[in-house]
Length: 329
Ligand code: CP
Image 1 (cartoon, rainbow, N blue to C red):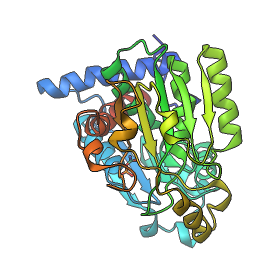
Image 2: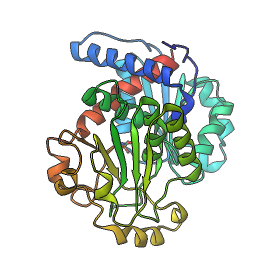
Image 3: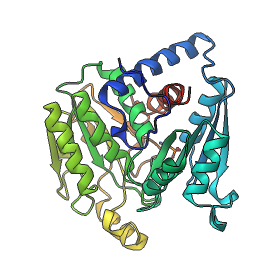
């Protein structure tokens, strides 16, 4: 068991080795049991986490804030628009200054071409660890909770299990691509065969796909891409895990009108029971939420027996508490 995580940043999914992720999950399950039994686990007494948000959140804010309190510390909610960032505080000021006030700095910055660079620049200046609450490239804490949930439902040995990571249609907004990118990077290391499905205009970042393929090759797992206009149902065949969500097109992330026009071509990319029926009988349905109900996924699937979305959301709390306890102690 690798336990040397104190002071470490967690920005990309691959910042922690497979063994280190296993350690995080062991701690997460221990913390989950302790919370269930009402046992105290104040491992971060007197520690304070800064939570800097450039983008809205329901789950991420709630789970980091509740998690810090349950660990005996405090989380400070800081919206970027209430700071002096727009008046000249750079990444260096943030890292240098907040790194001295706080024991960890968690940041959500999803702006395309900006977010990940921002986190890394703050990390360069900070003496406290930087935790990625979602950037334009990765959503690593979501992915830890996803892995934890899959292992709870399918067993710890995931070799030979198929996860389909599929694009889905949404009408609300052009959603970030960070979740599917984190999934294809992390899941091969844990033995899962990955099928990535999207309409032709919705590929992920080529360098991330190359990294994911290398992870799959090293792990001896399958990695398949289906990029056909009508490929969603086909991609679900024999899946153990169906993880389908919307994301915006790469080339037009800075052109929302064009992005919406492209997206609207694929309104039939909805997860419904007919498509779920081609997956394995005991397949689980996953989504990080928020989902566009009856647009991205049919209500009878989202609320149905195969859906694990609320367990998945709960596990954000336990997985993040584990990361904080290990990095901020
Ligand atoms: N899944 C997720 O990150 O949810 P929020 O955007 O509500 O934080």
